[in-house]
Image (cartoon, rainbow, N blue to C red):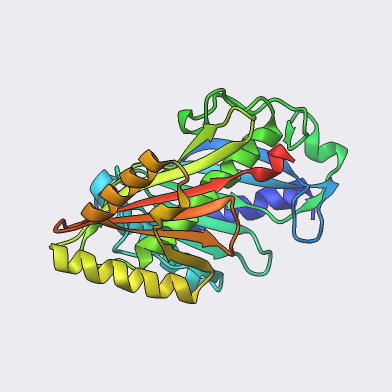
Length: 307
């Protein structure tokens, strides 16, 4: 497969999505390319290769009213699915961000359609890796070189100071994705309420290492529902890959810190979790007594940067 064939497949998948939305009353779908970049396949499961690249195309969908975007996600998902593509994740209507992920058949391209909390519709198509040629890269930048500068302005949530290279940018984006996935897993175990919309962010430590943090709140119908939600979550996480324990004030050597922890326990139940026992991935749950809310904090630290 070469760059021309990759572009043809990408255009066809996006075109199928547009046709799925056409004909809907009040909708005149169009595509505005936000990014079309090639990235080196240096972190693939097979070990990667500097000689292979993949093309990622990000588009905003225009001509769709904000209150119709969720409907269009379902239409695009159904069209892609009914065309024989493999479903990785179907839309979850209970989520604020409605999204679907698929893999194209027979080519294996990653496909995503999503509606943001504000109702904006976007799509992403990422190709499988293909061999880099002079024609494929002439006049185009290929991201992924360790010394290359990150493309364009960097989002504020990716940390201060901002990433200096494309490699640092990708590392921070992976950390953001990891804590986002954990938050999604936690949210899957809650029901009967709603989550706040704070985004994950990167914290740059003095050592130069980075830590992704996602802090958000889930509001239940009443305190009893919040109690049941936390108990159900603890049982599910214990059965999965998170080692969940209660909060122990005795771990603090300083007397003042220990007393502060004891006062915190008097007002709320605290749960702590470690991903497969790792010190660089943590989860905190705070359930205040008599309150209908649950506070969630997810942390994932890039310990490799300190090695």
